[in-house]
Structure formats: C-alpha cells, structure tokens
Image 1 (cartoon, one colour):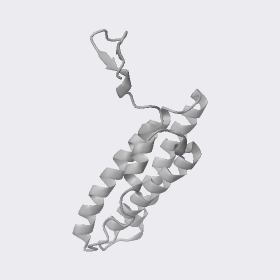
Image 2 (cartoon, rainbow, N blue to C red):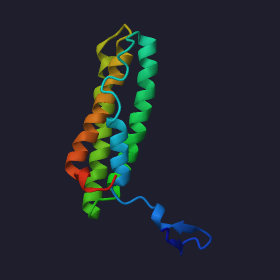
Image 3 (cartoon, one colour):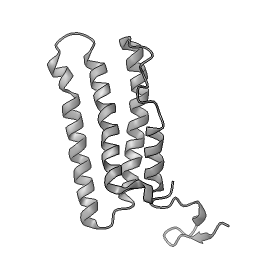
Image 4 (cartoon, rainbow, N blue to C red):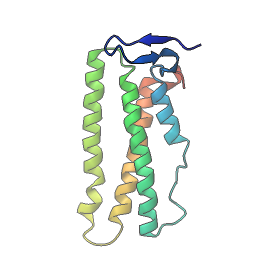
Length: 144
C-alpha cells in the first residue's frame, strides 16, 4: 500500500513513500547492471573502428552506472567523515584512472593500438573500482 506525504519544502509536491528506493538499493542495482554483462563485451570484432564503437558504448554504460553506484554509496555512509573519505577516494581514484589510462598515448607514437588500450584500461579499472567498493560496503546487506 502506498503512503502519500506532502513535502514541506514544496507543498505542491506529493511524494509516494512506497516508491522511494531504500538506501543501498540503487548501489546494488548499478553494480548488478554492470556485472551482469559480458566480461569480454567487444571480443567479436577486433578491427579498431568496430572495437572502439563497441567499447564506446560499453564505457558509456559502465561509467553511467559507476556514477550511480557511487551516488548510491553516498546514501549509506554513516558519518560526515566517512562521506568526506569516500568523496576524496573517488576524486583521487578518478584522477588515477585518467592518468594511468592516458599512458598508451604517451607510450606509442604511432599506430591504432592507443585507443583500444585506453578504452580497455578505463573499462577494466571502472569494474575493479566497483568491485573494491562493493567489498568495503558489503552490498549484500542492502535490498536490491
């Protein structure tokens, strides 16, 4: 049964409380969406253009879900200090990802390998980051 409430911040907005997503559930959904996909999503065609098109779509999907995942984790932190720590870790990790995944462009002067290597780097690191955070926050304790 849905429970309706009037928002005191905006009395014209009626909120259906049964439709609210419980804390942790959005993080679980984002994580599940990413890890329900293939571990080699673009292996059918290694031609550079086709591979980059496929990886572009995969990276967009993973990175949108990564952002939703981290936002979901922010909903379940237990203190301002933990939130500050999560935010610092996230900012620092994203800087690391950008720097490490830019190395193929610094390493190889010519050739088409730079794009695929960079895309795979980002894809692999995004997934590893989500796995690491999920072990810290033990997502199994939250509803899906």
